[in-house]
View (cartoon, rainbow, N blue to C red):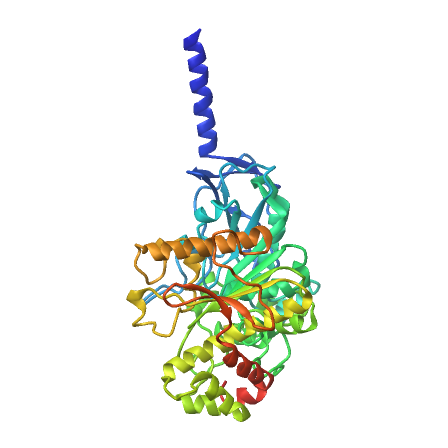
Amino acid sequence: MKKILFGLTFLMVNNLNAQDANPTVRTASGIVRGVTEGDVSIFRAIPYAAPPVGEFRWRPPQPVKNWEGELDATKPCKDCGQAGFGPNAPKMNPNSSEDCLFLNIWKPASSTAKSKLPVMVWIHGGGFTGGSGSSPQNFGYEMTKHGVILVNINYRLGRLGYFAHPALSAEFPNEPKGNYGYMDQIAALQWIQKNIAAFGGDPKNVTIFGFSAGGVSVHSLLTMPAAKGLFHKAISESGGGRDGVLTGRPIRKENADVLYAVSAETIGINFARKQGIEGTDAAALAKLRALGAEKIIDGGQETDGPGGPRTYSGPILDGKLVVETAESAYMAGRQPKVPLMIGNCSAEIGGPFVSSSKTKEELFASFGDLEAEAKAAYDPDGSKTFNEVITKFNTDWVWGEPARMTARAFLVKGAPAYMYQFGYVPASAQQRSPYGAGHGSEVSFVFNTLGARWGAPAEATSQEKELAKTMNSYWTNFAKTGNPNAQGLPNWPLYNNQNQSMLDVEMDGKIVSKPDPRKARFDVVEKAFKNRGRMQSRGI
């Protein structure tokens, strides 16, 4: 009898372990089978929309077809179609595919359909032309330790994701056009609303967060009517907030703005001609859809050469999905009243990114009537190098001041806002990055994936590990409650217009709460934005 009982117990334990090792969850489309690693269950490559290929290229995402049996969700999916990276790279990254509308889920292994855990949805960066929802830098092992579920999504990129052409505008005229990557993001959020409870998530507590193009996407989702109600908190990392970079080109109107002299449809015609396709009728569209994906991606080329016609447009003001810039929506108070976390790195990018100026004097002169104020803000004693000044100016113009503008707009709405600046640079990198942290430096600290950092030693120092632990806690706390603070963490003050309090991660990694030290720079940049037509004519 004892042997029988022992055998039954052994069998039951083995069955339980086998079940835990490959957990299954029933979604609206069918059962998915993931894998458990320690205390984390991972479900990879779950389709949230049908493959956007053939007749569905440049169409809104289509519903997933139901499947029988269990879908293997243990293996990574392909990234969305994008150019190869590095010297002598192929025109299309071999790890990418046009069939790419998948998401990955990281959840505590113990969570059940009754858990109702906060959900964080990561939107990757990459200039809307590259990037991945499956990057090791964005793995969710450490996120789940804080009792949240992480979802990483893919979305269409480049010309496969953002493309307009008169023939497309005429086809299915009631459909939104151009912003297929944004449509994918909305479809993924809709899938999450429908399915995440089965994984243990709370569809009423969803936080979207993203870096660079993902941060821009957060602004777009905050201001697109079609995204209303799909999330409840927002974090934009180096996503700007105004309409200066990657926030939309009119689909038809030429010269609509000094920043957008060419319409998205004209850019589409330019690209078609480059491929030897003339005309704007259905026959031209059929030829465009017949092109191989590698020809659409075309090595990521944006022009036909120096001075050539533009052939890539990025996100588009199509009038149906994207109806205005984030800036105009914020100024009018049309964003939802949700908690916001927003910020950027301290030295995002140098060189001629915004201005074509070659010297400090030339840059300051481009401010016109604000020249003296700009000099006082950026180089008060004349000791700064041009490289330092242009790096800080680029950072402020594209990311820093627009983030402040956004935070202020949320305050007017009555929503809490938290601002940050991330400036940590490893000691070994400070010689090549003397002005602060570059674009994306905070991402591996947010996810606490320091072993996957870009351009830094794989072995983290004890100080770096502590900083990553703190950053990871801030982000997950915010997802839980709308407030990044918790006992044991340095206080992160609410942003306010009086002393403009923010969280500053300084170059040495010290975390300080203080009034924003960039105020004077932001003030002159804000004034310059109001005169940007004049500024643009001077090379900014």
